[in-house]
Length: 267
Length: 332
Ligand SMILES: Cc1cc2nc3c(=O)[nH]c(=O)nc-3n(C[C@H](O)[C@H](O)[C@H](O)COP(=O)(O)OP(=O)(O)OC[C@H]3O[C@@H](n4cnc5c(N)ncnc54)[C@H](O)[C@@H]3O)c2cc1C
Image 1 (cartoon, each protein chain N blue to C red):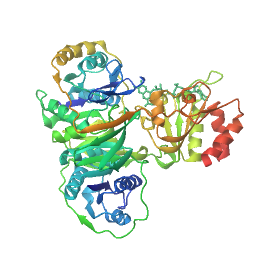
Image 2 (cartoon, chains in turn brown, purple):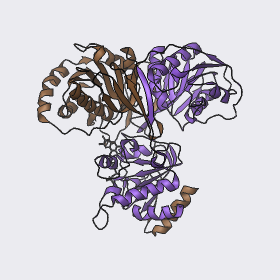
Image 3 (cartoon, protein in one colour):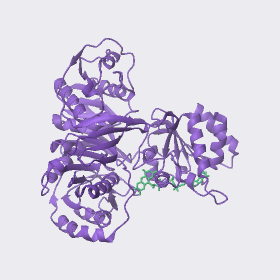
C-alpha cells in the first residue's frame, strides 16, 4: 500500500547516564533539577521513529512525530533528532515526566492525532515505544488506539514486513526469548516498538535542515497540554538505598574462585 | 470492595505461574473475590483454583480466544470485567495480558496502573507499589477512581497453594472483531535457548568478553564457547550489557546475542535468585538491569569497576576467561 501515514508518539526522557533524584514538587513528585537535566529522545520511541522512517521510504509514506513534552526541552532534543530521519512534528507543550498519568497523556495525544491535517484512518499506523523510559507503563499507545478506534494492536514489536496489498506481518516479543508472529490485513494498527532491527541513523545535516523548517514553526504553534494529574496520588517516591557490603576477592587462585562460585551456584 | 482476578489460561487450559501469583496478589487484599479466565479452554484453570475463595467464576473460551491477540483478548477481558462489576481488577503482567490491559481499562472507564510490585489494603485504602524511570526509583500510589485495573509483575507475590476442586464457571460469549491472525511462535531451538525466565541464575555477559585480552588479541570464539558451556552446565539464563549486544549485532562479538538479551535501562530487568556478572563495568543504566536479582556476584579484572561500589555481594578480581573455564569443569 502506498501513502501510509505513520504517526510516531514519543517524547523525551532524562539522559539515562544522569543521576535521578526524586523531590516533592508543588503538584506531586518531580525530579530534582528536572529542567536542567540533559534529555534524549525516549529510546524505544526513537527506535519506533527510525523504523517508521524506514517503512515510509518503502511505501512512499509520511512520518509524523507527535510529542507531548516541555517545549524548551523538546526543542533542544529535536536539534539532534531532526538530523536522523525526515518527519513532521506536532508538539503538545506539557509535562513528560514519569509521574504523569498515562491516561491523561493518551487523551492529549489522541486529540492531537485526530487533528493532523489530512489524516486518513484507513492509512494510519500508530507507532511508539512499547514502554517509556520514564513512566514505563506501556499503557499510552493502547489507549490512544482505543480512543481512535484502532483495535489491531501489537506490543514489543521488533519487526514489521509490509506486503504490496497493505497487509503486514509483525514479530512481537513474548516470554522466554520467543517471538509471536501475526499477520494483519492492514492499517489502521498500533505498534509499540521494542528495539527493532535498525541501528541509530547517522546525522544527516540535509535532513536536519529540511526538518528544522517545520520543527521551529511547530514548536511555536505548540498547544498547551497541562496534565492535571487528578486521581493519581503519590504517598512516596524514593531511590531505594541498595548499597551492598561488597566483599572484594583479590589475588585469589582461579581454582579457589571457581570452587567458591560452583558451591554458590549449586547451593 | 469487590476484586476481580482476571487472567488468561495457558495451553491445556491451566494457569501459569505469573497468573497464580496475580491471584495471590488479588486474594491477599482480603476483599470479596471474583475469578475471570479467558483462553482456548478455562475449566482446568478454574478447577485448579476452585478453592481460592472466589464468590464466582466467569469464563470466555473457544478457538477465537486461543491466541494472544489484542482484538479477541480485549473483548474477552471487557466482557468478563463488565459482568463482574468489580472495583479492582488484578491481571498478571505477562506479555499477553500487558498487550491489552490499558486498552481494556479505557473501555471500562477504569484507571490503570501496570507492573505493580506491591499491592496492599490497609484501613480501607488500597496502596500500590511500582517503579519509575526504568527501576531507578520506587513509588507508592493510590487512586480514588474505581474501577481500577492493575497488572502485577511476576516474582513479587506468593502463589496460593492447595486450591484444587471443581469450579462451576459461568461462560460468556463476547463478539470478536479483529483483522489479525496469530500465525505462530518463533522460539529458540532448545539447545540454543539462552533466555530462561524460570532459571535460578542470570549470567550477565559484559563488553569485556569482546575486548582485546592480555596479549592484545580478541578471543571471541573462546568467549562464545565458555559462555555457552556455562549456560549448558547451569541451565541459567543469559543477559548482556547494551555495549556487548550492540557490538554483537554489528557482527563484532558473540553471534548468539540479540537485543532480547539486553538488561538495563533500555533492556529488561529480570528476576532471578542469583546473578553472576562477568566482564561488566557496572554503570547505573546497566545496573538497573540487576535491580531484582537477589544474590549478586561479579568477575572483573578491574577492582575499581562499578560493581565494587556496593552493588554486588562479592566481586572477584580475576580473569573471567580463566574463572569460567575452571567453573565449567567443576560443574560438569
Ligand atoms: C541511552 C542509554 C541507554 C543505555 N541503556 C543501557 C542498557 O539498557 N543496558 C546496559 O547494559 N547499558 C546501557 N547503557 C550503557 C551503559 O551506560 C554502559 O555504557 C554499558 O552497559 C557498559 O557495558 P559493559 O559494562 O559491558 O562494558 P564496559 O564498560 O566496556 O566494561 C567492560 C568491562 O570488562 C572488564 N573486562 C575486560 N576483560 C576482562 C576479563 N578477561 N575478565 C574480567 N573482566 C574483564 C573490564 O575491566 C571492564 O570493566 C545505556 C546508555 C545510554 C546512553
